Length: 416
Image (cartoon, rainbow, N blue to C red; front, side, top):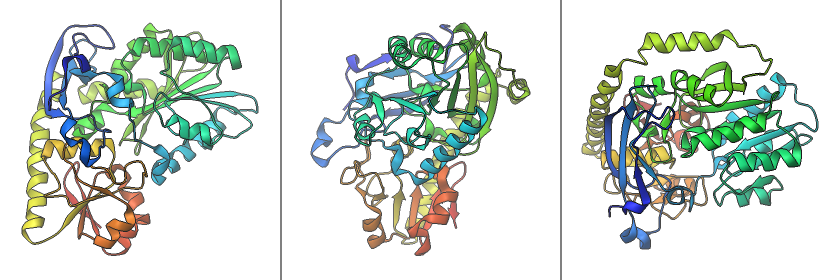
């Protein structure tokens, strides 16, 4: 069922620079919101919305062509970051690295914007003043564990409220959240006021050149409104009185290869690391301003779809049973774009208790516990959380019992 007009807004101008020079790039069809897992009885009411990508030919921000109402995405949000052991390990390392880098002291304020169920907040020394912001109902899980989490959408008003209560922040983190925000100007204004003249903002998000080079089209979904590069971020942040002082590429982020940037107020005394200019130069050499890099991406996505469908069909033609492993939001983009339903993928193993017993949006594949998956033991499992393949190869009972992963992107392969 197609969604109503009141639920969706077409992108008329670039969300970063305001230009109306938007080039249509790619359509992944009409899809339900990727985290809208549902029960069997709710199938008839499921709605789909356009999942299209456009490119700003002024600042070269790649972004969605349609924006859904936040209530459609976060009103019944079932993503729990703590149920991913690999992601929890990532956050543990991040907290340790940032604590050492910024020499955080007892009483310093650290704020995690978009904190989900508190996975990163819990990794900080409890002598710090830890505050989280999370608009979805999973904020209650963080609160129940004793964390100070505000259930709200972050904006300038909320930033002022936090600063009045605690002062400005030594550190603000926004991991896998900056590209999700519709009112990005209000959001960034809030971040600017919260870090004050001495604090640091750390943003981590999927990196556009990696997305295109590795054809990671499954990281495109309604929740991800923008796909970031330093080229588009630098002028946008500058307009908000912020500048990037360090930039790192991260091999394994929450959704795949990522960029991690360190941002301060323009008037701060932080020295700008050479990594910023190096990465900007890398993007220029890559062709960040060459439109043909982006238009070719759509053809590569269609080819990737064909290769993966042929790969799975070949396994099944030989009598193999195929399941799925992990039920992340990006997996639903993949399943819907390929048209893989329960006739092809028998079931999907998942550790998030909120998703167990439900079915995937659009494709309606049952979500089961790992124990149930091991009882059924299909020979192959399409690894939808492919960004954690190395972790799963080392820790998964499914692999220990002889199962094999189909890693879908950038090329379909079987591991081990």
